[in-house]
Image (cartoon, helix red, strand yellow):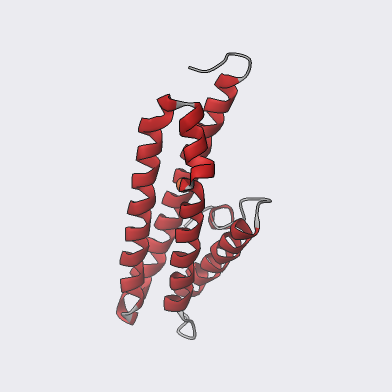
Length: 147
Ligand SMILES: [Fe+2]
C-alpha cells in the first residue's frame, strides 16, 4: 500500500488520550509492515484489543456532553451531522471487532494486514469529516450569530 507512512502517522498535538491513540496507530503501522513481510513473531490480537480500547475512549470523549453536546446546544442545525458521526463511531468499533476476529486465524493474516490498513483509512476519513463539520460550524458562527 502506498502512503503507509502518512496513513499511520500521528495526528499531531493533543490531550493524553490522543497521544495514546496516536502511539497505537503508529504500532498498527509497524504491525501492517510485519504482516506484509510475513513475520510470525508478532501478536496482532493484543495490539488490536488496545486499539479497540483507545477508540472506545476516544469516541466517548467526542460524544461527551462537553463536546458534541456543547456543539448541539450552540448549533441545533448540527444534529443530523452529529447523529451520522455517532453512527460512524459504532460502525468503526464493529469493524475493529471484525478485524480482531481475523487476528485469531494465522492463515488470514495477509487479509488482516489489508483490512487493518483500510480500517485506519476509514478512521482517518471519519476524523476529517468530523473536524470539517465542527470547525465549519465555528467558522460560520464567526461574527454571524446563532443559526
Ligand atoms: Fe469521531
